[in-house]
Length: 354
Image (cartoon, rainbow, N blue to C red; front, side, top):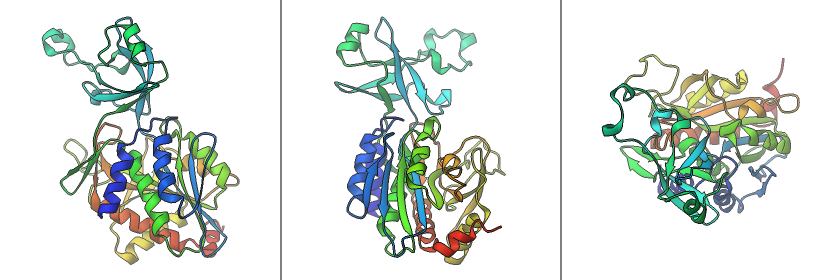
């Protein structure tokens, strides 16, 4: 990964962007892409950039979501502790003792998801998981009135606190899902110098709570074909099955043959595979039985949109720190650029020939 890509990924992952509160991320995308295309935002907050190519059709949509798994203030107790609701899918064991930032109308507040020390936990409870609805966030307030004076209100977004850092041959950061996809979308539109189509780069809002932004983006663009730029699930860790349908870090982009919201267009899938094999881009097939992407809604727009989900394999997604290998980012970008160049009118028309 070159320094320019690294700096973009750092800025995007460090920006706050809970579902429904993605403005800071959209501002970065606006700055990056306004010099090369017409940029707009829809009424849900999704960002869309239209970049003219050598031809006026087809319309190729490259979409990534802006939001990250996070939380929202639900209630403040009389003693000043925050009860919260999750925004997106969280696995309870990754939460306790995590640092978070509460974004209030008076500014950002550092907090921590509190945990009891083992000294006061009864032996019979030590092996029991603590459910989210019993957890709380401590921002150092002495009571509810003090928390209100600090600016805390129900509905305030709460973001995991985690800085961007190099780790081994890759990067560790919060919100890799899916700011990595946003960075890939930006770089694809920026570097695609000659493409026989109109490229739309979109960053959707509220994907983690039901892929809501994908609906409005698709209705705005009405694309002829859709590529979802995402992270994939890397399961190459101790305790995972040796034979897994999930990805391996360092082995290239994941081409998804199935997820809970999409069976991809087979000709589009085969086009991606052919590109990888001809260009010697390493790739891997993956399936995801639980979980879906923006393609779930985009593919059902109008009379149907041929769609494909491509992911850069990442470890520990839906936590406060995910790992992405630099080589996987670079190879995923190569595949996306090649697809942008290959999707001319004839090729796109052939995707749905019966």
